[in-house]
Amino acid sequence: MISIAVVEDEHPARKQTCHFLEQAGYTVQGFESGQLFLQKMETAPFDIIFLDMELPDMDGLEILTHIKAMHRDSEVIICTGNGTIENAVEATREGAFHYLTKPCRKHDICLMAERAAEKIRLHRENVHLQSQINDEGFLPGFIGNSKAMQDIFETITKISKINCNVLLEAETGTGKQLSARAIHELGPRKDAPFVYFNCGGFTEELICSELFGHEKGSFTGADRQKIGLLESASTGTVLLDEIGEMPLSMQVKLLHVLQERQILRVGGTTPIDLNIRIIAATNKNLREMIDNGSFREDLYYRLNVVTIRLPRLRQRPEDIPLLIDHFIVRANKAFSKKIQGISPQALGLLMQYNFPGNVRELENIIQHATALTEGSRLTPEDLPARLRQFHFQASDTEELLPLNEVEKRYISRVLKSTGFNINAAGKILQMSRTTLWRRIKKHGLSSSDNNRAT
Image: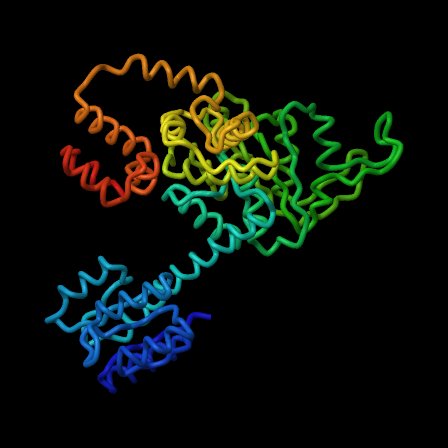
C-alpha cells in the first residue's frame, strides 16, 4: 500500500490535491505546516510527499533534507509557484522526484503519483529479490550497484510476473542459473518445482529419456516407468541450460512440445499436458548458429519471447569491490578464517584484470587467496600466479616519471577501471570522495571523465 502526504498551507489547494489522490486509490493525509508533517513522518513515514516550497514555518528545501535523512526511499514531489521554479529545480538536484507548477492539475498530480509509486514498487521488488537470493544462498551473481545490474534486477522483476518463455544470453560464470532461479522465485510459480537440465554432452536418446520420461519396456533396460523432468516440473519452471548444444533432431521434438504444450513419454501413446515455464540459457550466438544451420530458427523464436543479456564482470567494474567483500565473508566462514579485507594494491590489480571466467572466476580467486594467506588482509602475493605475473610485468614496465605525473596517471587509470565510480575508486586509492574530487581537479583530468563519475 502506497501512503501519501500533502504538505500545503493553503486549505483549498490541500483539500483538492488530497481529493484527487484519494479518487485514484491512494491513502492520503494532509498537513498545513512543515513541523506537523515532520512529527508524523518520524513515527509513520510516508512513501510519497507532495511538498509546497513556500510554507509559513519552514523552507521547502529544509523539509526535503529532513525527509531524506529520516526515510531516504520516500519520493518527494515539489509543488511550486512560478516565482520559485528555480528553487524547485534545485530541489530535484537534492533528491526530489519531480516538481509541479501551481495550480496543479488533476492529471499531473495523479501522473506524478503513479510514476513515483512505480519507482517505489520496483525498488521494493529489487530489495525483495536480493533478500530471496540471500535466503537461497546464490548471491554472487546478484551483488551490484552498477546500472548494468540494476537494469537486470528491474527486468527480472518485471518478467517474473509474466508467464512467457525467456532466453538468457551470457558468458559462462555470469549467473545464468541464478537469474533463472530468481525469475522462478519471484513469480507465481515459486511454490512449484524448479528443474535444471544441461543440454550439453548428451545423446538424443538420453535427452528424450531425461526430459520426456519413458514407459516400462520401451527400450532395453527400461524395467520401470520413469517420469521425465518436464512432467515432474508441473506448474513450475524448467531451465534448459546450454540450449545451443542440443542436437538438431532433438530441437524438432522440443519445438513440438513448446507448440502443443504436450509430451509423449518414450514408448508411450497418451499425450500428457504440460503447464510449465521454459527458460533457455546459452553462451553461444544462436543467430550465428541459425545462419550456419546448427540451430532451428523456429525454435529460437519460440524460446526468445524475452531475451535477457547478462553483463560480463568486466562491463560492471564498480561491482568488483562489493563482490570481493562478499566472497571474503563467505571464504572466512568456509575456511574458519578472519580475513579483514583486501589491500589497495591487490584490489587495484583485480580491477585491471579482464576476468574471462567472470564472477565465478573472481570467487575462485578470492577462495584461493583466503585459503592460503597467513595475513589479515589479502595482498598481491596471495593471488594466483597468473595475476602475480601480470602485477610484476606491469611494475617492471612502468616508466620513470615525476611523482605528480605518476599520481595523475594512476588516479586516471583507477577511475577508468572502476567505470568512473567515485566510491569504488576512492576505496582503491584509500581517499575520501572530497579528497578524490580535489585530486581530479588538481590534475586537470578531462571534464568528460568527471561527468561520468558517480
